[in-house]
Structure formats: structure tokens, C-alpha cells
Length: 168
Ligand SMILES: [Zn+2]
Ligand SMILES: [Zn+2]
Image (cartoon, rainbow, N blue to C red; front, side, top):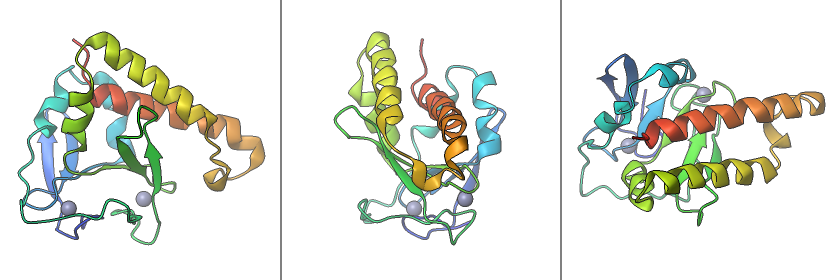
């Protein structure tokens, strides 16, 4: 798979029981397959730590405003999810395979935004309620399934967020 941001070949990184694809020596981005998400719940609280220090190419500059194609599906353009707290953190998700992409450095930024455990909980709540307000009809297969789709996506993002922000 190639990095959706800088086209460097993604490398496999094994963290405890999880396999993550990272853009090492490139932009430092992180890709998580949907199947790997399922393991997030079972991970130790420090699982995300291994992803904090991915070596990056300092000369590489990334246009973060550009829409990205899913590294797995290639032709599918990913949807961008901004966090609602100051819109500082963005996560791309593939509406087709359900994988998640995080730009290089975003993880450090997420973590640096919160000093305390309470702040992280609060931010997660805010993030989820912000997400709820957003219309996502565009990717929902049918109107009838919208609620179910929304619920599913919320819980996935919630898990991702908790994974990235391990609570002590
Ligand atoms: Zn990259
Ligand atoms: Zn995909």
C-alpha cells in the first residue's frame, strides 16, 4: 500500500497484537484497517504509545487540505472527520472498507491538546456530539440505514479516539 498523503510505501508496524501500517521515513501518517480496530478494545492502555514516534522525513511537506484516496481501495476518496474541539485534528475514513487514516504528527497534537484525563473524556464527548450533528447521508447506503450507520461509525471513532488517548 502507498501512503495516501505522500505516496511513500507504507510499512507494517506491529504493536503488541495489532498490525498498523505507517508512513515511516515519509510523512509519518498512520493507517488502521477496520479489522484491526476490532482489537483496539482489547489492547492495553498504552498500545497507542508505540505509534507516537514514527520517524519522519523532515524535508517532506504535506498539503493537508487535499482529499486523500484510501490506500487500500485506491479509487475511493476518503471522508474527512474533523474533531469538534477547535477543528484541530482531522481523521480520514474510507466509506468503503472502513479504514482510518491519521496524518503524521496528528497523534502528538491530539495528545498535546489535553493535559488531564478529564479533559480527554470531555473532548471525546464533544467530539462525538459534534459528529452526531453532522449529516453523513452522503455515505449512508440508504436513508433507512442512516441511524444504524451513524451509530456504528460513532462507536468506531470513539474507540479510535480512546486508543489514541489512553486513559490512565
Ligand atoms: Zn506519507
Ligand atoms: Zn478503503
